[in-house]
Image 1 (cartoon, rainbow, N blue to C red):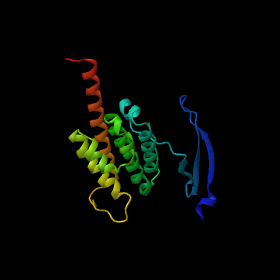
Image 2 (tube, rainbow, N blue to C red; image 1 turned 90 degrees about the vertical axis):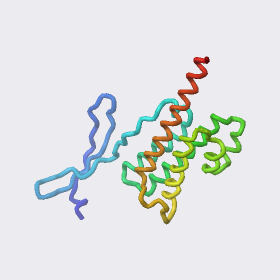
Image 3 (cartoon, rainbow, N blue to C red; image 1 turned 180 degrees about the horizontal axis):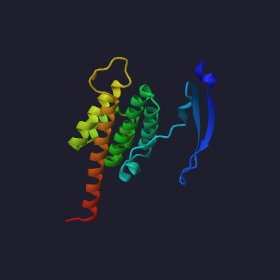
Image 4 (cartoon, one colour; image 1 turned 180 degrees about the vertical axis):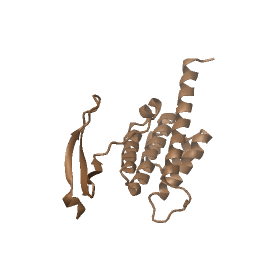
Length: 178
């Protein structure tokens, strides 16, 4: 077993803003030791607009977990994680637009929320596709075989963009009435 001939060493990041500890796993080879792996691996997170972060903090939390799963090669977990994150985003967005229907939105299937409570056609079209691909990520057989988690992420990013545009536009319409 090659792992039994390896060495583990603890390091501390030299960056002043970090100083986190990590473990380097070295394996013995013909030329000496070589770095085989570093744990824990840090995850580069996507930037998400502040207005969306405020709209749906749980979306951010679940989305970051899905990003972490994907960065660690846990692709079977990442897809359903992205789908779950999006459910929080779309429901929180719908609630922000329809606060009187909060309880109904929370209890409804995401697809029904998109049909009944999302008026912006751009968000509606993208959201439907996120839900299609997200559901595919949770099922045994895939319907959308030519699409994958990368497409799911792109569609979620499009939804984030449309929501940001719509929310910011509304903010300025209220702040600067005609």
